[in-house]
Image 1 (cartoon, rainbow, N blue to C red):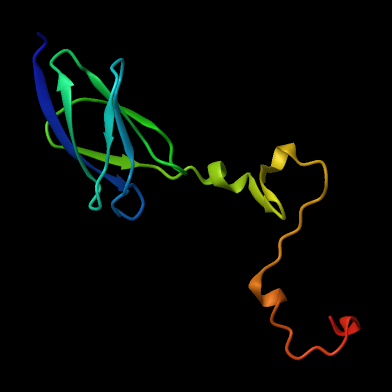
Image 2 (image 1 turned 90 degrees about the horizontal axis):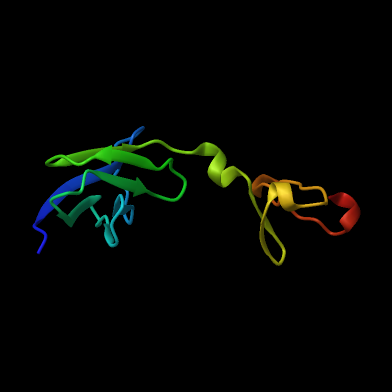
Length: 121
């Protein structure tokens, strides 16, 4: 039977140091994994032959790291990952998949005061 060990660590945002809740931590080449808790911490049983982990989180660049004791993982934001998604009237789509035009409406556009007819908009 293969021997196992427990690795522990913390996953945070590289820019502001905030904990990333629910980040996925997987062992490279093995099944199973875990997610970070409310404080960004994780604990994972790995085989003694495991060498690397992969940490991922939506909107961030995945990171592959060598396993060590008390790991501190800082993920970089992937600004273009979420910018390409457009919310449309009946769902969401990637900007590259749309064939029509796309416009942005901000909350200030709705705050026009009292309007009694459409011509006043």
